Image (cartoon, rainbow over all chains, first blue to last red; front, side, top):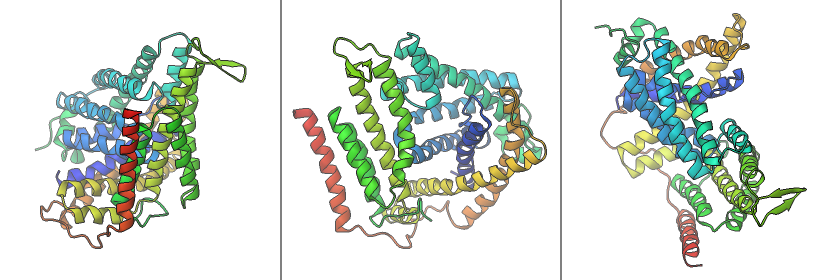
Length: 193
Length: 249
């Protein structure tokens, strides 16, 4: 990793962890705790995104228990999806960004449901588990309740996260964006020569 | 540079081995009495330690998991032919045992993680990794420790930006869409500040030879004492014994 990528990764991880608390303070029904991973990918490439994602999972595990390390593959999925979206100018507008977010949410939600059901018996973060309990109490079998709750949460969360990352990339000054060619490509503008 | 207020004097690798071994031991012990007893022992050890307030922090993290485990697997599940009566309610016996097992295992993992973090001396860990050699391991450890410090700085900066934008009239109430939009004036300054800092930090890292391929020199490598060997072998033997008991009982 280049020194610039090494310097970018801690900032991206800090954004992941800080934004989670900010969102909780504002009282939004989403987590947005992968925005840093997405930004690291869109700015520094796939390697930076995967490093930021895995490190986020490692450090949030350090603060709340290492059992959540089982969800590390989700961070890799998000980094890969963001990298693909950035290469195809997926952040050029709200609609494409939300579309990529929904696609990512479907894959991440499905994988997350499998991990949640097999390793945690459906009991993970409070918000998702409350939804699982509600569906299960209404007679939905546990495996389907876990899948439905994971998909619902991830679809909304990743759509909002991708839209927010698109806003942030567009908001960057041109001179700063020029240092990150992938970011310029992600929003559909040519990088400065 | 420490992970918590009470760093331990054993070798940093020993505390990592103890934390990992204790978590594996909880998974290896036969359900449901084994993990529950193990959880109680770990909780008592934490209570007797210098970081006893970790127990309360751990309880706040474990309590919702216990609540939902019992709700989903014992209260909402079909009680079957062999239920348990508790407080006038019929609970599924198997679900209750499953909840106790899973809740205890998660409780142990949470407690050992938090205790390890609170007692971690990051400088000694970095020196221990440097003494062992391996550029990738050292860079990974440095990255994790540098990030821990960045998080605290970002939290302060976020609070300052939030206060400044509120003073300029930013409202964080209303519909979810409006509140998501309110994130933009909070996150743009945070991101810009982070990216400006990236260049400065990259220059600093290059100046200090981080990209160098030469082995790093530990300033004060921690020694591995007899106590370290005893603790490492003790937890390893406990895990092996628990696995053998599960196989041959």
